[in-house]
Structures are given as C-alpha cells and as structure tokens.
Image 1 (cartoon, rainbow, N blue to C red):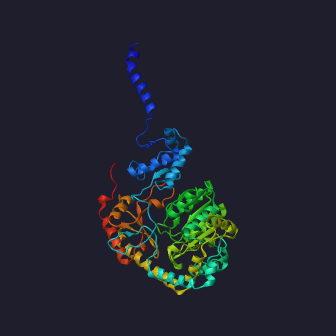
Image 2: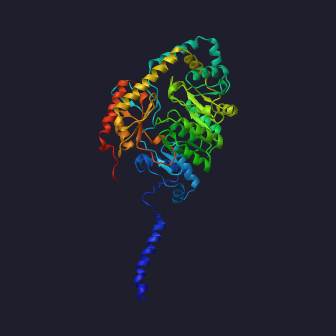
Image 3: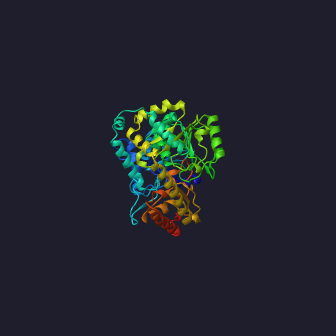
Length: 493
C-alpha cells in the first residue's frame, strides 16, 4: 500500500504527458510540418507551403524535407499526395530530390530564377556573369549570320524549300553537308547516321525519351551537366552518380552497379567533364564500351563542349557504335541562338528517334539548317573556330595563373575552370559575396548527381566575359575575395 501511494503521482504524471503528446502530435524540432488552410488540392497546398517556407527562411538551403511517408502521417494524407507535392515543388525549382537520400531545399540565394539570356557586359562597372558556359563573344558571329541570311533572302529555291515540311531527320542534302563539317572537326560520321536536332539539349531529351521509360535508372558522373539532370527529371528517370577519378568516371564502381542491376543508359562527356574538365582516359573508354556491350545498356556521349581534335580521345561511338548516341551542336562553336545540332544514331534506332522528333516538333526548321550549312562551308567558320581555340587557351592561362594557389582544373582549350575552395570556405557564401561584388559564378550543387553532399567548389565559365580585360577584373575580385576567409567560412551552430 505504501509503495502504491509512493508511485501514484509519478504514474499519473506519465499518463497525462502521454495523452498530451498524442493529442498534439508532437514531432522533433528538426521536422518541418506545413500549416494547410484546407482550400484547393492538397498536393498544391503542400507545394505552395514549401515555396512560402523557403521564401520566408523557415526552410534553409540544403535542408532536407521530411520523408514523404512521415509527413503524410503527420498531415493525415496519402503518401501519393505528398509525393505529388514534392514533385510540383521540384518542378518549380524550390527543392531537388536525390536518389537514396531524400528531397532537399535548393541552395540558391537568387530572388528570381536564373536567366539564360546571356548578354556579355560591356561596362566594367556592371555585372560580370561567369555562370553560363558560353563561347567567347566575337563580332563575326553576328555579321556572318547577317551576311548568310541576306544571301538566303535572294535565293528563291532556298526560300521555297524553307517553307516546306521536311522529313523528321532532315533531308539527306543537309545531313551530308553537316556530316562533312563534323568530319573536318575530327568527328567522322556518315550522313545516314545523323538526326538533326534543335541544339544539344534537344538531343539529350530526344535520346532519353527514345531509350528509356519512366522509373528506369540512368547513370552519370557524380558531377555532370545540369541539362542532363533536368531532362532526366522531366522524363521521370532515377539518376545515379558514379564517382569521378582524375582520369574520369570510376569504371570499377560502374561495374559493381552493373552486377547488381545494370542501368538503362550511361551519360558521359568524355573529352571534358562539365564542370571539372576531367577527361576520360583511353583505357576507361574501352572498358565503358565493353561494359555497354556486355550488359546491354546505352551510352549517351555528349560532345557539345567543343575541343580541337588534338585534345580529344577516341570517340566512344567508334568503340561501341551499336550502343552509343553521340550529341553535337553549333552552340559552343558558332552561336547558341542558332539551335541546330545533330545526333549520331545507330541504324536500329533511326525509326525510334524519328518518331520522337515527330512527336515533339516534327522537324528542325529548314531555314536555320540552311544557314548553318552555308556558314560552315565558308572560310569564316574556320577562322572563328581558330580564333576561339586560341582565345580560350589564353583565358585558361590567365585564370590558372591568378588562382594557382587553389589548384584549379580545366582543359587547356576548354571554356570552364573548376576551382576547389580552401578548407572551411563555403561555396554558397563565396557565390553570394561575389554576387554583391558584381561577379556571378556557379557553385557545385547544380552539377551534383546522387546522394553525396556537394563539394565545396565553384565553376568559372571563362568565355562568358566580354573581353580579356573584363575577365581579368573578375579574376582579381575572386582572388581578393578568397583572401578574406572570415566572411566565407562555416558558421558555428
């Protein structure tokens, strides 16, 4: 009896606390729970709440959202509703899913979505935007296009051809002229193997939609081109990252993946990884081709980031011709606004790719293809490419010399420079500080594939500066900012 009296009040207190806990549905402080007003579609209300929380600072960049099942239980909705809400928030750019890890708030300090309207600054007091991978500006790009369009406007035969419907892959005449140009650039192809596209990004999207089905797995370097990541999300594919080594993709890690469950396809940029500039070694190219043939997965080989032939390795589409689709475009050579490129496609895939083009846009505009073909057949295209190759080499030298203490990497004739940051320096803090100082660069997060955290590094696109003088100014600002570590280091919690 005495024991019961002694324990009575402690037991009553425990019971009361349990009741209160269950009624209030108490959750850990680290779990974010949105407040819903009960109006409209539930998935839309959740996605709107995510957007509002990000804008208000309630959800921080890099913060992980609650697991879908757990949030569904807390809100009393189905898991499918939360899944759809997360997908909508991702479509709007507020969050990003990482396979095997969860959904995270995007790390962006911009108040508005980034613009891809690239107009190099003419004023040294204006913003110097090194965030987009653009070829160095040259007046010849606009003047030569103007001359060609003037010629076309006086050619009745070409004008009649330009207003007609063409086959999905384009007419053989255009494909033959484009193939001749690619061969001169060190990419030997047959005209019959080409499918004309509206640029490299269109080529990626076509390849994914022709080769994959929603839910299938694709593989890329752990740091890769954001356009591939975006296209894979639109196609509802599961993207897995394979570690990068100094000589390219870790083929042993890919081999282990294949023994468990081979991916549907592997995406590579073998001559210069975007963003790091790492090249895939000849031995690894052969191993990748062998794995593709053995496990019957496809390879998308992206060659849009142009390099002179001396800097390139053996094309993978030559090592595994029946398993590889090669992507090329005029964007990084002539002008991004032309939106003309090509896919090199195995014969067995011709009909499937034609159907994909027909479903999306029927054909590439013949007027633009004619303009490109005329341009590349003249001397001015060769002059422009020669100048650009030299210019990019000079800009690479400028950047490496100014930032040498941070051990940057990149191709000697490439456009991008990858800059690992000193210990303790945050990429997000650096990009934010530089933005305030009128220099815009890109952190590692947009390039990340898989669940591994983004490395503390940034990409500089050297060609985007309007001149060497403007680039030198930007490099000085970056260098001087890195010498002020107090504002860029990790903040204690």
